[in-house]
Length: 245
Image 1: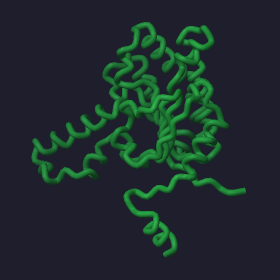
Image 2: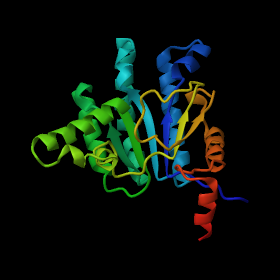
Image 3: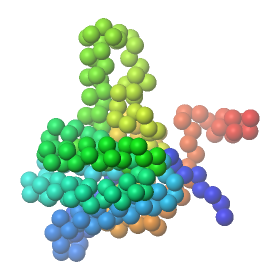
């Protein structure tokens, strides 16, 4: 049996919960609940395949524009989900981190986020990144703000700012950038998700709605990734030569 080349870091936009519910004449909240179960399964299946980092786009900066009741339900779902799942994640040696702007989150959710991050920080297994109130533009902006402050205080000169310096100030700078990006529900956009970090990721789009994204669908995405030639600007011939050295 051929062993697939697996990505170190998978980033997923979990799209289609509302449409999944609508097709079944159910409220949107039912779709979000089904989406939580799909997220639970993808975490389990990524751990089983020894994926080092899994990022899930749970709530974007733009999602605040949704109806207030839906946003409120989503925040409640995050909080109850954390309370229910953290012990299982911890027992499985998973390190849980959150990325995004926390200033608009309610205090109870912020408190729980800090608690689970502290609890799971020593864990050495897969890193699970949850993006909440996150946007790629926000991420780049906050990185540039840090560098601008360093210039203002004289710690840096503007000529010292390089792509590497910017990357060092972005969210999860200590982790590898995504190798594989997955978006469900047939949308062909990255929707302001990890704009900097996805520069060289392989992009995989599927029509499957997120609550239906199961182990078989994950394996399809991994097979797609394994069949890609990742050149990073080099030619195929250069890669072949370097691999033969």
